[in-house]
Length: 356
Image (tube, rainbow, N blue to C red; front, side, top):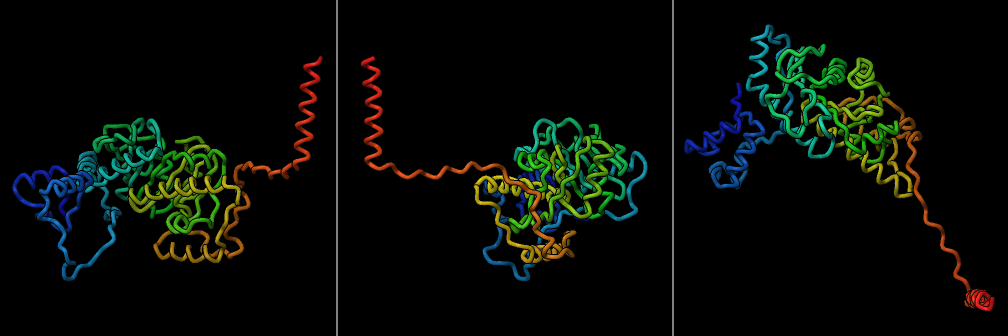
């Protein structure tokens, strides 16, 4: 099993006189551990662990993978076993990442008050979730709770959020959804209030990393009806705008799900600004979108448009840009004779008033 290093572990290691090089290469670092390592390097205490000037022989660069993989059929049973798992080092790492994503959501102004919620699936029937009535910008590890796929709370001292059922509906609908993030970013939520699905074929990156953004009909938040409406869209959409409510995104891990929230908000913001410029929205066409869908599928992401014809793609007929006030055309300049006549008429009117 990989060694999990927390911020406290790093501080104790440095206090013992050892350098950062003493941390195993394959150790799992919590966000607080990463912060401690950065601080040590900045202060000079971590100089011994500085990267070599030349690539090490046999260097094999990787892409980090934070997807949590449990062994199917091994969910703990019973109060003590569940709580031991809930407080295990492996789940503590995930809880810290959830808190980190909560701070990012809050810092980006994607939620206010106690808005938004985050979930991560950690077993066949177990899901970590943020509790109700708490600011995502100040959430602590020991405030995370755990529920089963029916929404029953099985661990944690804080009460789970009522909206967790929508997250669970997504996870039930598609096993690929290991984490969900719900928030109310301003521009994407504006699309939700207007009941408008963002148009397509405008920017390549959202087409690859988000795919088609769906629009779920309005249902009261936290109700079975809302969970059903959103869950039905999840297998073919990783970003779902909930009408008159907000946005929910899913991914293979909590950071992946959060990235999709950022992608959605940035895309909606850009579309809004572009639609006000008065020049229309230029699409790059269905043939180019086909290429982007192929890239998306090569990354293992779902896209219902894969088998659609090019003429069926890039249909933005339902999108209506906001009203743009055009500047009136400048009228022809009056001739010098016209100007003199106008001055004379005004002068005559003034003189008449003075005589009267």
